[in-house]
Image 1 (cartoon, rainbow, N blue to C red):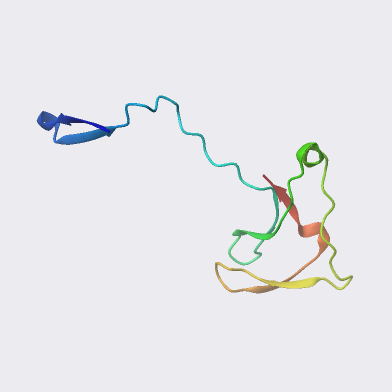
Image 2 (tube, helix red, strand yellow; image 1 turned 90 degrees about the horizontal axis):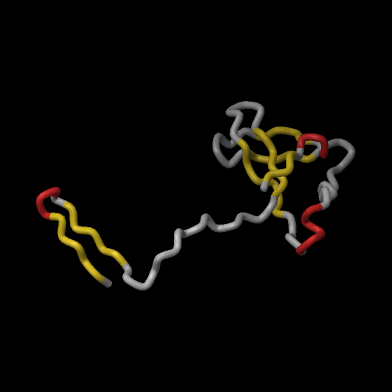
Length: 91
């Protein structure tokens, strides 16, 4: 590691001499999300297994009971009844 002292600016900068590439954000798994009707926060219901070329196709939504499923918002704790049509695909 090479350290450059830019003391007149009050900055000490560490640079790896062997790394010249730009770091890329980590690829996130696709997932099904729900939106809380109270606080409007989007939260994860379930992850979708990424299986190569198959991930380019629209994934089938998880099964829900005909009467809906109760889910708790991790942000505000509100319990709401959700249906399969409430699931949104996010990448």
